[in-house]
Length: 96
Ligand SMILES: [Zn+2]
Image (cartoon, rainbow, N blue to C red; front, side, top):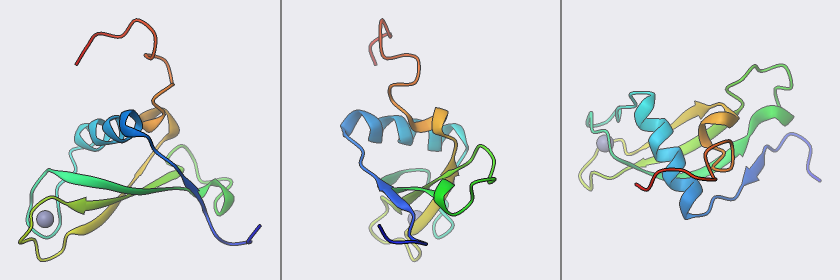
């Protein structure tokens, strides 16, 4: 184990979709072009670095979908409940 390095959390397709919804719910906008569409990069668990860091303990790397964006790389912090695909609605959820 490497001290001081946050743990990277793998996301499957469903998890990625869940993150994108959470990002949209937060009202995220690209700082470079103002767009609201992004691809999800890595998700880092910050609890190793900030054990007392509150509920927004996960850092999600985003990349703007705009090919001409001047500043496509961004990130957002989310709580576990906002991106954990298995947190609640996995069974019996509505399609879409
Ligand atoms: Zn952009």
